[in-house]
Length: 157
Length: 291
Image (cartoon, rainbow over all chains, first blue to last red):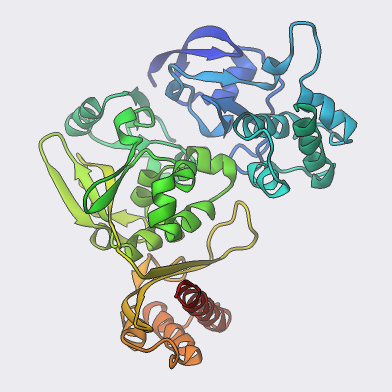
């Protein structure tokens, strides 16, 4: 197995690494960059717990080899933290709407929602549901999560 | 055991050069099928020596309207298709097919080229592309050939791709006026659903008569196929006289003639009949509204 040299940005920080040919983006984020906010659920692209934003698009980091991300910009849940330690408007809204129960799906939900609001700051409920169609929650229930995204959209006015 | 070297390139010529010089190369684009198969340690991947990443080849990410056709780069993702104005204006059935794939996250990564190249029984774009009489542009280092998609997908997970070739573009001929289409899919749920049965109907309706009918199955047959016998029944019929029950029966019979009787046939017979009936009702309504 060969090693591939990749340079990419994670949460604004330039990273250069040599990665093995099987290393997935989620492995790199969690095990090498210590960014544990991104979770691994199913590992086969069905649950969305590992969602990050890559070049403005929400993607599942278990479905990408790190060798593929050279030159990309990656945003993880940790990258939403502001300099003054304040939470992102989506994180505030999720708390307010009761959209977090066990919390395992939350980073993925937030990153899918973040990509949506960046592209479409005033989504309809249908558009929110579509954007979250790849994120599964097994305990909170989707109603509060959709409410959280709606609330964040209103707060962004 | 799956063991490979990863090759990366941002340039089409260098990708074709790798394909020309190396053996046992598997391409990766969105990775939405391949990474699942690697994780499952699928035995047919044991013989690969290289995985070649083509997801960053910018020249294959465009959608361009030419004089007679629209050319879609093989690295265009499903979401790029669904959001593209030219595709929405010209081929709404392709948009419906792309929207039915996986989830929003999968559609941000999965590509047109990957869907065609994997040629899965349940591939959602392939039946729509067949109905649209799309052609696949295949490039190798020294050659280019253009093959109708019907001749490219030749079996479940089987294509006519040569080992040194790559799918670079899909060309879809422009339709002209009075064409109406409908994409019907049955899956177990809305999102993240693998197609169980798919039917794509595309037809011209002129002087209230069905012309140039195209009807393609997906998932229900081993690979997407044109339902030629049913097409003959519909072709030339006036929309007001068509007996949709008869067409439903014709589709069920044609399905069984391809697949044989299976344990699932008692379920699939009425369901596939319903899909074509729905599709016919939809296109007739759309044509009538358009008058």
